[in-house]
Length: 235
Ligand code: OAD
Image (cartoon, rainbow, N blue to C red):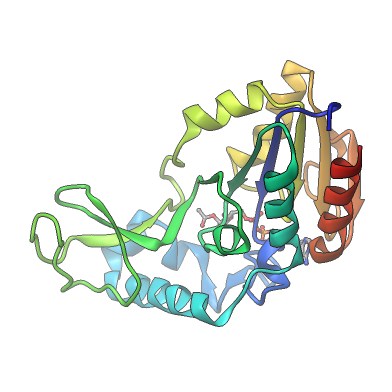
């Protein structure tokens, strides 16, 4: 542990795959039978808000059918037992890290469990369906609620805090992400520029940016992450 005081873990869809949540780019470019530009852009929401709400309502409902896997719980174990800091920066909008026991989790692409009012900008927790008729519980505006998800073309959340964490990291681990979507795909280059953290990729296959990592391990996260955590806690 003394080797790596501050640990930053970036996660993507691959860490939730063994829980039964579909990844984005493993299904002929379709995400749950939809093209991303039809459900994950502000333009799509303006064009067809019913479709976009229905899509995210289904994703939100699906959360109660899935449970955290061994990779999620291993990261929670690491956070609980490591004497330095362990922060999970996730691109995932599911809540499997939190349900797996992780406490310090940053959702840079938003959360399925939140909706936001386009009128007063208040973010509220949401468990059921949301649609074009939903009234804002804060300002009572009608029809202005949207999923609190970062869509393509929008600015990811918490970037100042994330870049601060990258600057202070001793170990950066990227798990289950294809390395195709920025700014997350650029974190390893950012770390390399600072030049002090060890970098490790854990992914089913080499990601687009695999060559930028000092160390790569390829295989299922549910097998490789518990092994990695055991190594860190043993050192
Ligand atoms: P992708 O679907 O692009 O990539 C998932 C990666 O996980 C792939 O490289 C897979 O090989 C790998 N993988 C699959 N199963 C795995 C397993 N069991 N163990 C380990 N790795 C596995 O998902 P992301 O990189 O997360 O953004 O996508 C990034 C962003 O693009 C998402 O957050 C989303 C999407 O558009 C927004 O919605 C804004």
